[in-house]
Structures are given as structure tokens and as C-alpha cells.
Image (cartoon, rainbow, N blue to C red; front, side, top):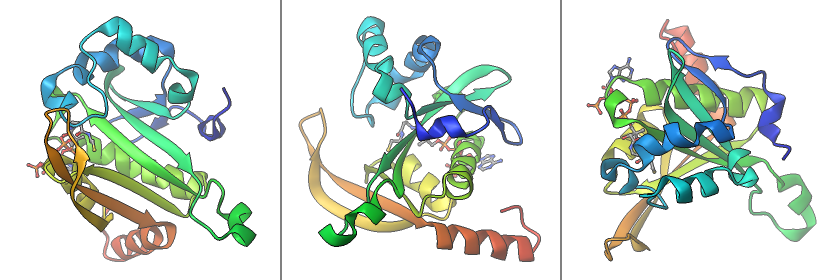
Length: 201
Ligand SMILES: CC(C)(COP(=O)(O)OP(=O)(O)OC[C@H]1O[C@@H](n2cnc3c(N)ncnc32)[C@H](O)[C@@H]1OP(=O)(O)O)[C@@H](O)C(=O)NCCC(=O)NCCS
């Protein structure tokens, strides 16, 4: 399946990590952390069985929007880039096609707390805006998922949405949700401000 991500020269390296497109061979490595309760409690689907997970992971549509994060050649997390159309009025709808993306991120808990997720998602934002030419990226989480919204805020994303008890968790509880976004212009101005005071953007 052809993906817009195919146009990027993978792997993309950051200071400590390497990002590349996921393949069928990454199913088990990603399941190893996605099956853990501490991780799956926040994910759309819990995957206790590897066979079930593999089937979902290998779906070409899912693979086409999945990247893996490697540290010294070992998969320690994964990222999602789901391209979307912006809402638009009918006469201008064509101009709004594929101009934005929803991002997702998961890190093996053994590697949490060292800035790896921030490093990977920061690079993903750069790829989205600089290489893919997107105008807006978004990400959503349960409000109770503090690690997730703290990550978005660390990266300069802007909270746009706080929803009250609108998402049903598999525990049976209706939970609050949060939505964040970042525009290409905001990203560019954050980077130029950081560069002008000598901080690594
Ligand atoms: C969301 C998630 C990726 C965040 O992981 P994380 O480890 O908190 O994020 P980072 O890897 O960027 O690490 C940041 C932490 O490392 C610290 N850190 C250490 N070195 C750092 C560095 N060089 N750069 C940045 N932060 C650093 C930060 O201070 C921060 O710690 P704090 O949370 O105590 O303030 C992770 O919790 C996760 O995978 N959760 C389960 C899946 C999930 O919820 N996904 C999102 C669904 S919406």
C-alpha cells in the first residue's frame, strides 16, 4: 500500500534514536510493550494475544501509518501518522484534502522518563511540517493520561479541547478527553524563537 510516508528517506536519525516505517516483522516487538496493562490502559485496543495483535498490526492500512522508534537497533516504541482532510465548506473541500494528520505515540515503559518519546515526536513534527508540508497536526488523549498530555505540552502543542465524560473506557467509566494541535506557522515561530536565543529547537 502506498503511503505519503514512503516519500521520506528512512531511517531518519535523531540525536539518540532512529525512526523508520514499520514492517510485519515489528509485530512482536511492539506487542511486547503494547500488551502491558500500564500501556494498554490508554490504547484504543488491548491485545492480550499475539496472534490477534499480529493480524491487526499487519493490516496494510495500519502499517502504512506506523513508524517504529529504535534505540541501538532495538524497537522501543512506535508512532502513528494518520493523514486527514480538514473540515471545509463544499466549494473549497478539495483544498482541505490531506492537509493535516493525527499523531499517536507509544513507548516501552522500560525506556520512559528519558525524553525518548519527546525526541521522537519532536522529529515527527519536523517531518510533518518540513517534509510532508502539512498545515496542522493534532493528538488526543484521555485527560487522565498525564504522561501523554505533558508530552504534547513539552513539545509546544496547544490544548484546544477538554471534553467532559465523552469517551468510554473499557473499564466501563466515561472519561474526560483532551485534544491538542499545532499549526505549521506556530511550529516555525517556536523554532525561530528557540534558535534566536541559542536553544536547541
Ligand atoms: C505517553 C508516553 C509516550 C510518554 O512517555 P515519557 O517517558 O513520559 O516521555 P519522554 O520519553 O519524552 O520522557 C519525558 C520524561 O523524561 C524526562 N527526561 C529525562 N531526560 C530528558 C531529555 N533528554 N529530554 C526530555 N525529557 C527528559 C522528562 O523530564 C520527563 O519526565 P517527567 O515526566 O517526570 O517530567 C508514555 O507514557 C507511553 O507510552 N504511555 C502509554 C501509551 C500512551 O498513553 N500513548 C498515548 C496515547 S494518547
